[in-house]
Length: 181
Image (cartoon, helix red, strand yellow):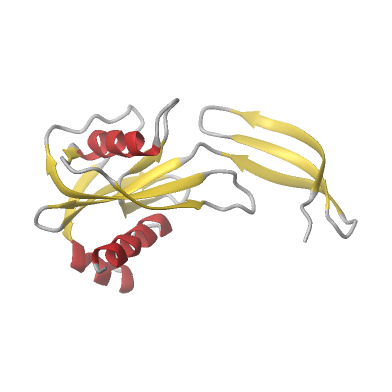
């Protein structure tokens, strides 16, 4: 198996959220794709955050892409020169006001959508979390914090009785597998 050959690259836009580049590529069989688009995004972090009483700390927020409200685990993009562990601790504290005296446990690092994106997501488990302060939200954020029993969340996902996204569901099941070992 061989990689595609990039014949040309043009950036259609660049901004703080992400970049879009258009490439012309030659496949190993000689076919040329004139307009292949790649989204360049920052790496992300997310975390399953559990209190001492096994309550899952979730955030509910509006997502304009689908024009809907979603119940999610805390997440966000990394800031400059920030490790993924530093980033998730910052994001959890900013979005929820929760922290923990225990170090985050890395559950996995995965590419988001390598067909058309270049970024990865690092997923953590944070245990024994407790509230220490009020949220510190960006001007563009409006987030409600919700606590739900860890085991109860399984039924909510399986019965599709909540609006959530794939990263939350996969992180939940990664954490559940880790905790059951």
